[in-house]
Amino acid sequence: MSAEPSIRERRQPTAQEFRDMQNSQEFGELRSKFRSFAFPMTIAFFVWYIAYVLIATFASEWMATPVFGSINIGLIFGLLQFVTTFVITYVYIVFANKNLEPRQSAIRKKMEG
Image (cartoon, rainbow, N blue to C red; front, side):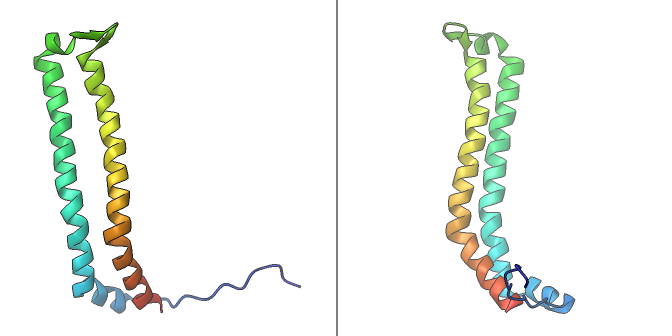
């Protein structure tokens, strides 16, 4: 007696089917939708990070300005880098669940049956 649950076999698409899907309009729309989020968000974060590094380098006296206690502007900006990363991750998850996952599921169903 086997304790293994029965798993529905997925159809394995051929290499040609993968190439055809890669060239399809629906895959192009998925790729375009992903890029419309990823590229601007990457550029925005990179600009924010470079600004932080440049300010720390060329305005170190300003970054050393105490805000409260031994907490200074530079430390706050550094911590905001982490906050920004978590916010971008959260926003991406919401975006992907709403805009990418339905398209991905449709493609997967079409490819695997």
